[in-house]
Image (cartoon, rainbow, N blue to C red; front, side, top):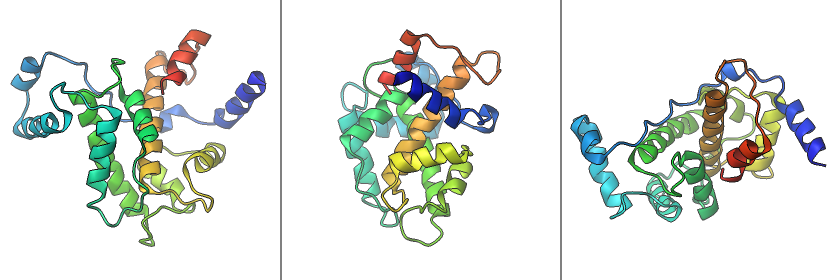
Length: 214
């Protein structure tokens, strides 16, 4: 059964050219806070002050904190149709962004994801051509392409089944959750594809490490 699943997955992605995908640059590695602050511009210092207020004493954002932050922000945007970010979707987003496996997002991880969400919010609004607050199935291919991820038909259908409603419409929280994961998986692939061949070799341990915490 597992072999059939892998064969089906390979069939879905076999005609994808990884070079067409444009994931965001990886967030920088963590450094001591005093070193980071020495090299920050005014905008970055302002963002750090806001982050300290959001993250609390431990200076990290947990899935619960991320859920509260995102839902508070989207409640102020009436043009975004959403059921709200669930704790499970926020756990998934933290997992794929958690480069040091702490279970939380540090400053740079959070800033990286926040900037992406802001950019993808613009993509979402631009592609909601009918002003419905959701992106319909006809609008989705262009939306993903504008976000840097042109999808083939088979992968697009998989994403529709996973993230859209029964009518093929995708609301804002599912659109963002999908893109956070897609971006992270593409960055992981490009990191492992050291010779830029478009393929990677993983043993079972590496495969499980890559998939089970994402």
